[in-house]
Image 1 (cartoon, one colour):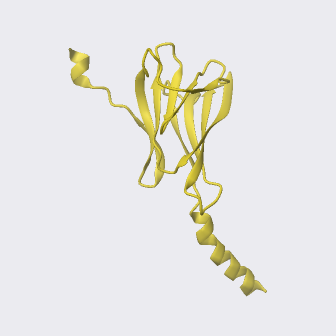
Image 2 (cartoon, rainbow, N blue to C red):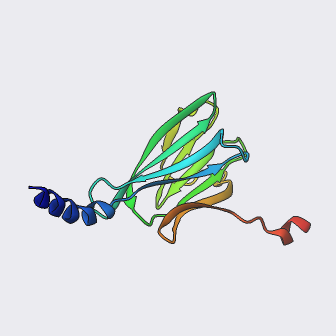
Image 3 (cartoon, helix red, strand yellow):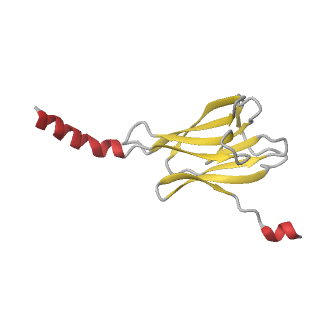
Length: 145
């Protein structure tokens, strides 16, 4: 009986290891209390799609998890900040607007705003098998001009 349980456990292990369940965080003001996080969840190992969630947090005032749909596990998610302080989350061709004042708003956008996307803050992407946030490097030459 023990041998059968051991064999079943060994056979199931590779199936479970193929699932994705990870996340990465962008600290807005270099504190862990004001952040945008991306969470990827792959419910079935045989499906190459992941469910994407954005967690908007400004502690202790608010924190909310918003679904932004499904995408491939390697989809890059870009974060832009507009002058009003709101954020645009771009995952593939899908775009959403969110804010950190109340953390409640997550509105799907039909297209790029007329006033532009704002400043690219960085990109959530897979690097060496791990989801990471890569901050946008500010161009030093344009800052000097």
